[in-house]
Image (cartoon, rainbow, N blue to C red):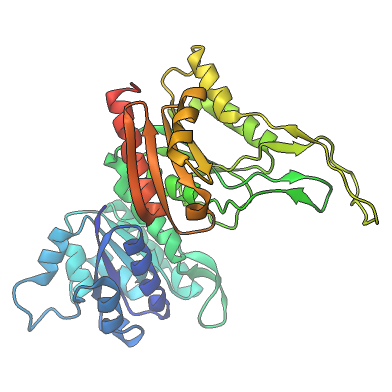
Length: 396
């Protein structure tokens, strides 16, 4: 995980910086904050200190040493959010008259700028000229987005959402990660099997684990393809998202992706059965029972393992999940052999479905590694390290 400095300048969108700081911390990063005096009119120093657990840099004078230099040395990345028109102009001109700008001038790592301003300020020739200068200097941008503004107007200038900014920050940190240069395909969420145009068979999977793995793989430098069943989650910025609904659609998408994958993580909760037929119109209520004939869906993990065992995709690292209601580790060991996988993530349904944390065990041919109750993001980061180790040491 990284050391990230968040610089907050004085715009109405400064209130979103609190959520950004919390989101970066939730993802496991160490976060410190620098604020301009104008920013303090919108969000309090005490709030940011409470969220980060560290003092906030608000002054250049009357403090010992050179805190802006120390903060620049400490930080792997600086995110300026929101960045006002004034802050962007000063940054482009090399001015250093507040804690945010002085820290930026001392950064040893990259800088990510998230602009926020009225759409006419964003469209002004001066702002666009300053952005060109900063891009030439190697500074990156995320946003702004088009939408409702604080003034009541609508247009380009709205601050990107904190999760989008956090995704962009992590993408900048990922170039030297454990899976750098690899192509990772991840399946996530449930599959839904339609009975008629209204009803379906499904399961309780939220997709949170698969989406956390996608974020962790991005952070590790991988090129990520996310094949997702229907969920209410936002895909991380930077992934290739493929939406599917049924197990058959997921099957087709996975096999389409295999030729361009170095790692396949099957985290989706795939329906084992589907209705033999789908009614073309809504089935009406009646006094009698409704009998539904089910047929087996393809076992995607087993099919991929079998094709690899037969000589196809020899360089592929194959990861599956074993969601059980009891004896998860023992059942995962059996699944590892039957499905010819490299790693099975064993977990219990009671610990997982819909929750932000989980308890899992990584089962490989060399043993089992238990991860006690932890956030799904932390488990995803541990899984990335396990995959990297497998690819280094081999499957045996």
